[in-house]
Length: 361
Ligand code: F0G
Image (cartoon, protein in one colour):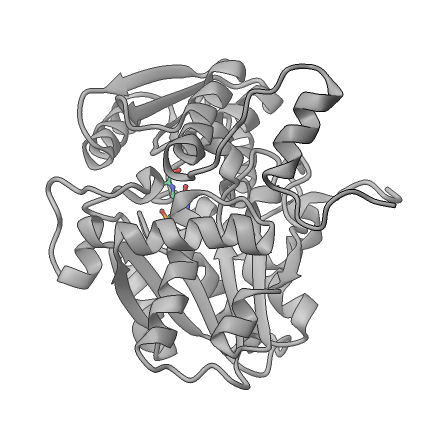
């Protein structure tokens, strides 16, 4: 096994519902980088700020941690296929793991609302794609109904194995930092991830792998903030398509995580999401999804509203890769691409306008 990535099923076997009959499948999920902040930490006066780069998972988002377990259990139970609704990442992950173990994947996505990279993944992996003329919440109720009627395993986070697998990210943070951070900032959509992280921290604490528990700081987009409002949002809107969700499946898990940890679930505006998205890319060198920027935007907002971060350790979960949504980057990041003739004079002329300091020697 030397050097080969073992995947989360093997690595955290003792904490997962994995038995002798469970196929130990992997695409190399987990073991994602925990990277220290350079720029934002200075701006916030927070010397211990880290980003957990979940976009480094095999399909480019955190979903792989739970999907690998959900698909392994589906195989173990002799399932004939998997089905999910998705704003894109879950469907990309289901399609990949389905292809890996050769069981068909069916994905229901809100038509016209899924980032191009995510849709390309589902297509490339050979999933059956149903573009629902409605939103994610409608797609999820349809997926649930179909899974009741047919011998298909639902692999949305209402499948308990998804939540079990995703908690391994909390384990990794504690394994790396030696304890839980003071604050964990995380975007909230269908609310499975915040539920999983809290479970992971609580289990590790009970197993005496961590001395402390973090405050869970969840952030929903302003136009898609049912948990903050205390009621479902029938027509959720936000630039962050991954968290455009009006009636989260793990609503209770999220409020439990918030309340038991002494944390919060708050909103961030689309402008705040965009600012954080740009700052992550240009200031930290980390290209994340708009939805992932919501957690960072939330931390910035808390600091602006007076939360003292000095002496606090903070981890922001960067849930997915910016490469998922290149159209978004092109649309929302102003940067000039200058056309230049293929000769040195033209390149020099173009450089003179942007390079300070002049020529060498
Ligand atoms: N960040 C990204 C990049 C996501 O894709 C999602 C959810 C979230 C955050 C929110 O996580 O739902 O556990 O609260 N994406 C789901 C999907 C809904 O279908 O891919 P959550």
